[in-house]
Length: 393
Ligand code: NAP
Image (tube, rainbow, N blue to C red; front, top):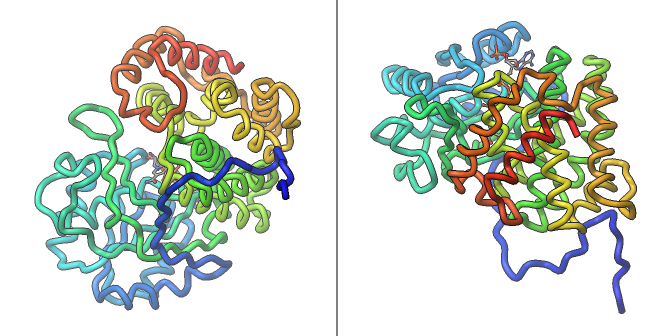
């Protein structure tokens, strides 16, 4: 019997072997943040709560957490795109106060700092001693992650992405010990996200899902989650951007964000992220938007190397998978940008043409940045991707 072959879903044969590991307990639902204390008490007696500088307090989440937890201490100095010295400072505090577990409340930045704190609290050395995988020999303190953006999916990944202040680049600590023990996803915490942060973080969700499908390390389980995330972002991100109080759209986006985290926890990210970090660190473009601006050129290229995968994505994004895939995927992305009232041209977000050659040289000289990318990547190609992204085509 031959199975129906549909371009709406991935129909590749199963790979001979794969591993899929997300050990995080996922608690989802409106109001579930009020059950934080139960999960915290199961992990220890003295939590360190890690937050950004303003939003956790402003949206009332910090007060709601402190009202539930008698012996909690707070580190509330995490900046966007956090640096290693913030983590080391917070880890010192964690040790001095005798904390026994960590609770992150915030976007990807506080969650990543909380992970580094959980690792540094049990291991000698600084962040730089643990970049890459294979560090954190003594594991990490247990961690609860409460995302307030939708998002990065960091609440279900084993990564802590930090700015290495020595090199000025983003580097990652990867360890299974960094998977949060519990992820508490309460959509109500995202309802005050400003429109810009809603859009930028939503594009990160889309980027992670799309990259996961074409990654050299994609898994069949992850592919199913990634396509689901693409469909939800396509449908609900415009609603969440238009009306932040749309509780259905907020819940859908928080769920899609978590799905995209489950995807990259296995598949990692690809050249989109490798290139996007330069837009963020050198041009001040928000992390998710930086990735979103690179999707069209990269996925025209991916369409040549993984047409069936890109066809499935085109279908998930509401396009025609039987058309010319490079054109179709570009049209899908540009339609989404138009609905979000965003220019897809990096030039309109502060990127200058004279920066691109250097970015391409830096990325091209560090193949680790695109180790999961399919195709044969050269510095020339990277420069062409940047140039297309600059012009938004
Ligand atoms: P973010 O840097 O955590 O937060 C962006 C802004 O949103 C901040 O100004 C923050 O304010 C504010 N904010 C957060 N929640 C809010 C809320 N509910 N209402 C109003 N404002 C709110 O942004 P992000 O995009 O979530 O995280 C990006 C970082 O995550 C990057 O460093 C990226 O490299 C990393 N990342 C990590 C992973 C992983 O698996 N580890 C995956 C993807 C991305 P405050 O600063 O005052 O809180």
